[in-house]
Image 1 (cartoon, rainbow, N blue to C red):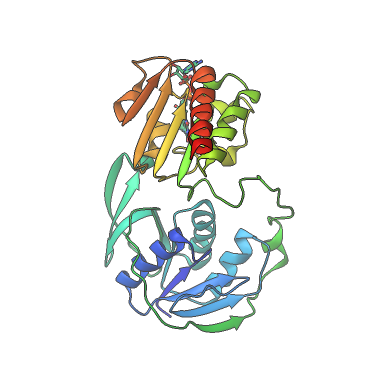
Image 2 (tube, rainbow, N blue to C red):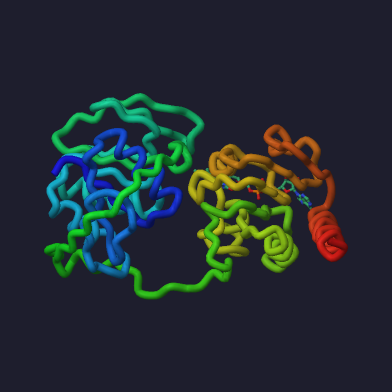
Length: 297
Ligand SMILES: Cc1cc2nc3c(=O)[nH]c(=O)nc-3n(C[C@H](O)[C@H](O)[C@H](O)COP(=O)(O)OP(=O)(O)OC[C@H]3O[C@@H](n4cnc5c(N)ncnc54)[C@H](O)[C@@H]3O)c2cc1C
């Protein structure tokens, strides 16, 4: 086999990855775990669940690919790092374009692009999310179940429990609206009005690293270089200064409405709209106005 795509799900990021892989190799095959995604390709499906990064990498390595492509997500990067070691391959993360051995990839949270050459028999790449326009390829998948040879030690790190984050099934990476809070929100309790606003707008709540470091929100809510990369239609950072590491995660947003008491805050340079004022007053005021307009409609 030449090119193998590790597909976590047939969602937007998965389909972007598949489009990238097909451009690289039209005969690219897919490997998936649990359910077979309904995509037009040969799909190898291993009934190996729940998530266990080393075991999934072992399954991928067992298919003897010469190129492996995955999404540049936490799981994509983790599984391919293991697979690269097992296959003795070279691995480039957050690639946006590839031509033979030559790749262009994002570094420093996307603030610079690097041209690199992959030297090695086996090449592994993850694709930076939201950098490829999806091209649908119609057709029925040819599904091929397989039993990977997994060792006991491969299962030491695995998912043992899932905790519902009560976002109504919307993920931070895919939500059309994200209302994020920063240090300016003041406390964990200060996020309740942001939750309410996000709920009204059909979105989810995110946050800055200052907030996760303070223990006000879980790391899964963090937007940024070391958090989730988002590309919503509307991003509303509340009490967030706009440090480069935060902006690295939200520069894909189509519109940005900043709420901040400091008109000189760096976030203003990226804002399409801004409200200068105290977040504890502005957010409830927006929510009240939205309720009034919705009620009137
Ligand atoms: C290697 C590395 C990786 C990092 N990765 C990330 C990352 O992924 N994501 C991330 O977010 N950060 C990341 N950081 C941290 C980043 O550098 C900043 O420290 C962090 O983003 C600051 O968070 P903040 O904007 O909430 O807080 P601050 O910078 O303290 O800003 C608070 C803002 O709130 C405003 N404010 C205060 N009170 C109010 C009020 N009542 N109403 C309205 N506005 C108010 C202030 O004017 C200020 O602009 C990283 C740093 C490093 C070194």
